[in-house]
Amino acid sequence: MSTDRPEKRFLRATVVSNVSIAPLYYRLKLEFNDESAKALSRVVPGQFIEIELSRLSLPPFKAIPENLLDSAQRQIILRRPFSFSDITVYGDLRVCAEVLFCALGPGTLRMTTLSKGDELGIIGPLGNGFSVPKGKTLALLIAGGMGAPPLQYLAGYLRSNKPEMELAAFAGAKSVGDLPFIVKGSELEEFSRFGIETHIATDDGSAGFKGFITEYVTDWFKKRCPPALDTIIYSCGPEAMLAAVAKLAKENNIDCQISMERMMACGIGICQSCAVEVKVAGQSCSEYKLCCKDGPVFESKDVVFE
View 1: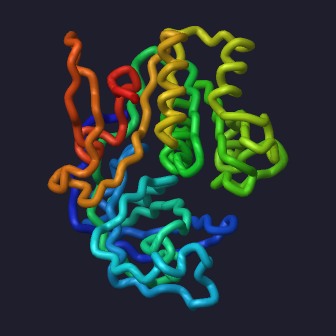
View 2 (view 1 turned 60 degrees about the vertical axis):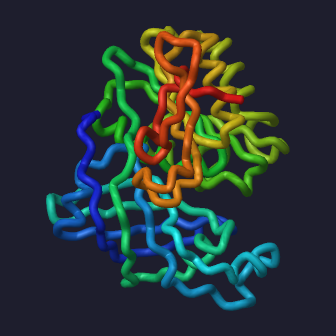
């Protein structure tokens, strides 16, 4: 992948579709044209956009989940960050991008009302993305809950740009209903459509392995014993899971890149609300970097986990 970051810009997007794939989970497809399309034509997996939601309306009262009735009334001031789950480039003047979201708060609840033809104001692309070091022949994609989107995009990206690379996807959630995927038996359609082997773990055992996804990956490592120098791990999800993934990577001497989750209110490093503690190379101290500018993708060995 190229390390050259596309210039971030104020963009306009038109909603192509907004489809519910499961209770609370939606797949939003956006179309960008002209200059907005050019800005997104070189986006790599892991980068994100900030979407303006302040002008969106709430859904009908009866459609608002009971647990969101109070918070739904809050005024939306700040933009919300979303990574891409897919991007398709149709030349320099048209790009279609997909965003996966879960209606869990006043902002995402309003997003459920978006329909074909609606327009959105967006800042992007932002942050850095995943990269592929030379010599890697096996990539493990480990997703926890809503950490799925950038790894979905990464799966298609690697299959198109690194067809010789072996890929394996692992996804974990509390239950099968919390998996932000189309689940068909033991497969996740978003990965299996690329011919990628998929593995599922749920805390309650309602799908796949019963337990944490990191426990499943640990067992997989013991059985497969992948060569460390040829392997790389990509992961996104809750911080506790990322800490476990980082520990697993360190124990097996495997390169690992993680996409951190933080409240990124501005997306451009002004609000300073998304600090991530990282180690200082060659020293025993640490420093703070901004998830929105220096991340959201970091080398797992550099991040300080509590």
